[in-house]
Length: 158
Image 1 (cartoon, one colour):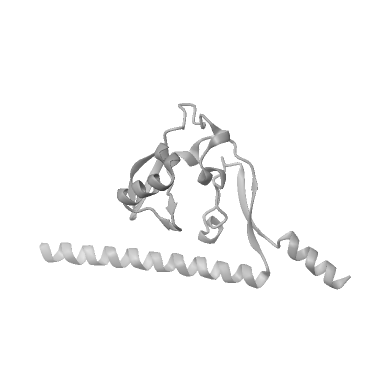
Image 2: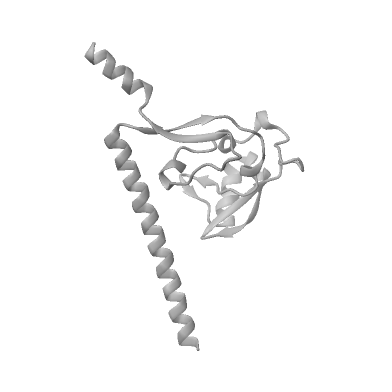
């Protein structure tokens, strides 16, 4: 019985590793395809203030997802405003958070002074994962040729 549990644990960790590798390959191929087409992901729209994105999210520190409570404590020391975040738990090795500024109505109690990560949500890097924005969100992320590139091309032609 113990041997069977070890096999199941190994196969689960192998599956998780395979999934991570597949996701990284997909992100890389999407990145290469956009470069070939001369496109970049661009965020459009505006916040509907529905509060859905504030209920469960990951946080990066120094470009990496926070995985431990000690990493989160170090982030709070660097950026005290992040103390308003509440750790909900861990999913697939990353900590997930909610915001204490989220009211019972599901809106931010001080939307004008929200954290930088909130102002930048959703990150255009989301495009590379293939994750679409939920229907209730006022934002979308699409691949487009940046205006600067179109302008440069027109100037060089004309």
